[in-house]
Length: 150
Image (cartoon, rainbow, N blue to C red; front, side):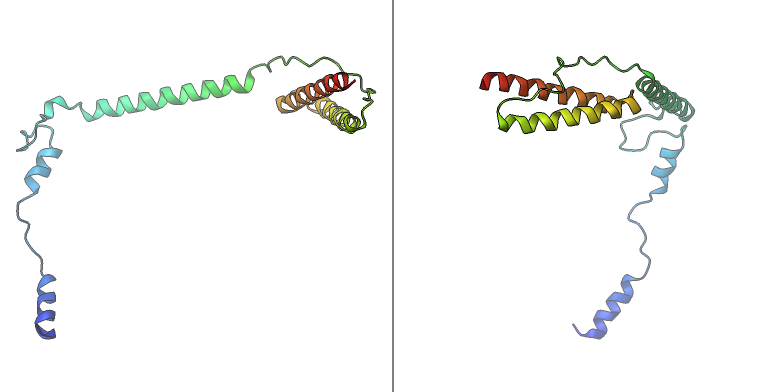
């Protein structure tokens, strides 16, 4: 095959081709609610819900979901903060005899004082309350370790 024949075949491909079957009948039947069944289709148009009913159902679902999410968000924002059980008090001047534990005791007491100051500025902060409880638990564990060490 030479280049001239090849270009001629390419030019023929640019020409419009008629479809093998007419698609408009199937499209008209699908769009028309009162049209008879399309050949080869096992669903009848009478079994489909009417479009206005679908719109109302979709709108009702969207409204219900937004009310549910809005109510949940409002409850989360306006719910009282849960009471956090504090660990037993450890004296701020407590210093273990073991020098390895003494450094940790100093760091934990400094962190506890800083968290208490921050809580005075933002008393409703749940994150600060959790950090304070965690620090106090670490102090009490350190106190137990110092007692066990002798």
